[in-house]
Length: 251
Image (tube, rainbow, N blue to C red; front, side, top):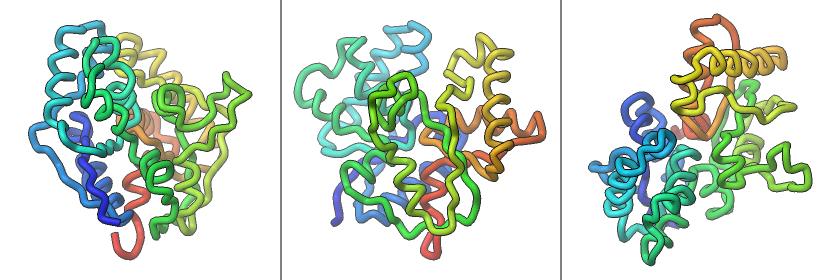
């Protein structure tokens, strides 16, 4: 296939979970992509948008679009960052004209790209564990990567579920809820008690279901859950979708 893909690595992934970025490269190459990386990329502006700092967010948004100019396909291991670029730059009135508009729409979350753009679910991955899924709030509700429970009429399949079901040895643990893990960016800073309580509830649900791991499309959510797991001493171990898909004999 040899499809050219530019890898968009969120700032917090670069600083706190670089293995997720490396795993994304392995997964994309395994899917037949030719991956490039722009080393000057930084933050997409999401934290500043969430805090109402439009001016700071706009500067980062403009830089992001400039750095990825000319790339037909951009893939990112973070649903929330993709949602920011694809949808929320409109709030800043940035990237509304061509070719920036097309660039924004051609920015994909990793699982979304594999399933909906490449038509790929099986990547030769092997992971013999019971795995629960945390649907990313941004991915689920901003990108349509599944059917949120508050909209029962929808039946959109979740790319992450299709990918996990193709992993050899993996048992996907069903979840009855698609509630937030409690991170929510600055929400976890402003309301730490509520944030922690929400996260503990999710960990308890998955632990009761016998999950050994929990996976998601967003590193930020997984970092939040890992901190709670270590502090509380229970719950499944978080692993990003890219890291899970990068498993296998040729990983």
